[in-house]
Amino acid sequence: MTQSTRTVLRTQLNQALAALKDAWRVLRHRGPSQIQFWFIALVIGITAGFMALGFRKGIAALQALVYQTDDILFLHSFAEKLHWTWILAIPTVGGLVVGIILHRFTDDGRVRSVADVIEGSAISDGRVETKAGVASFFASLITLSTGGSTGREGPVVHMAGVISTWVCQRINADGITGRDLLGCAVAAAVSASFNAPIAGALFALEVVLRHFAVHAFAPIVIASVAGTVINRLAYGDVTEFVLDTPGSLQFYVELPAFLILGLICGLVSLLLMRSIFFAEDFGNHVQARLSLPRWLRPAVSGAMLGVLAVWFPHIIGVGYETTIRALTGDLVLTTAILFAVMKTVAVAITMGGRMGGGVFSPSLMIGALTGLAFGLIATGLLPSVSGTHTLYAFAGMGAVAAAVLGAPISTTLIVFELTGDWQIGLAVMVSVSMSTALASRLVDRSFFLTQLERRGVHLAAGPQAYLLAMLRAGAVMRPLGDPNTASREEVQEMIEQGLCVRASATLEAAMPYFDRDGITWLPVVVRDDDGVENPVGALYHVDALKAYNRALAATAAEEHS
Image: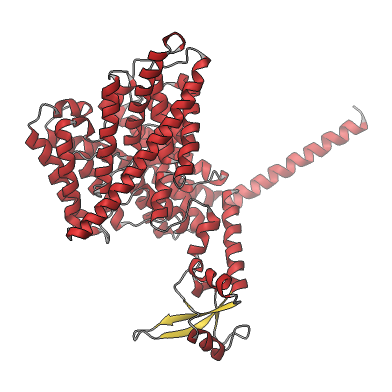
């Protein structure tokens, strides 16, 4: 062995020993705390998994009790045989109960869902509302059990956030830890609800945390696996949709058809989202015009659903029976189109009427119906170069759901996990990419982010847009008496000119003053019990910019750690 070879080996050995020493030092000094964090993440994951399982079983039990059926998977077929008065009365009474719950336990009568969890992750250190969240959970349980036309993912995601918030408050978790634990709870809830461990973990990262930081990946995966185990202990290792028809591309020449399907699904998802927002705005207008009590609004929506369900019982609940029929091709063209339209109307009525629930399951159903209708037309026009029309139903299911959620990665994977068919990958990926590319440009990235934008919470544009809303003028100002701040006389003079901002105001409200009025500092005031604005300090433009830059740097550090 030459001298140079021995030198190289000795250098590599020394580097390996140094790495082992560093690893031992990290394990000895930081290992216990890291292990403790992972243990907490596991406990949260198990708890959230059991919560999601209980929600699912609760819906099944209440639906069986209310509709007097043994097999809720075929609830729609059974509902066709019920007298119309029952079909009308059940969602009406359910809406009345929902309205009373929300009126009593929320300050605005609004159901909390995924959008509120995203907001809590971004600007509240991973915390969500607990009292309103629990009320929304039970309101959504009643909604889905009594004919509401929504999905179960929204309530379980927010309730998972309630669980992680409770833990974070007990351990006084910081922002990064709070967001990581929130992601763990959400991943476990989604996984337990749909038996989809991969998609559950990626949903938490892609939709809720909105980043793929390495430090968050391991605990979220642990929690997601825990949620999946809980689901499989109850339901076995089976997929959500048990299908007998395999999907496969017969010819690659079909891929352009899936590109077109993706564009159509993007428009369908836009129609679904816009119809929900229209129904919400219209409901607000009618409620204000008629002075309708807010506790009565869900009952009115329930009555409207009941009328619709008399002729179209497929709109009741989550809609698995209709989704399966679409995925197996057990519907003709006109029926698929009509069912998709009626389901869209029903979802808009349910959510516009503030009855509770999520949009993921309805988007799966509407997507499957859209894909089936497109597939029947495509295979009918070019039968010699086309595969099965059910493959288009699979692709459409993923394309609409991905565009609504703004989550192409996790939605693509959840379609695979819900069906157990991994041979349809090309078709689903092509359609999902086109639908999300189109829809994300016509709304604020997704249904959830558009909801927040309508409330004045600007998360769609990224941290540079919403971080200013997290910083208060009172926390950044220089107090009066500080040698580096303006004198009391100067402050008072500015106030008399109408230039001031309250200490509770955000930098988002304060920053326009600097650009508009060309000033370098702004008085900060506090209103006393008599309504008098008393000066307490001065907010300097340079200090505001420094605080904003620090917040941006901290966010970037978290997302890349």
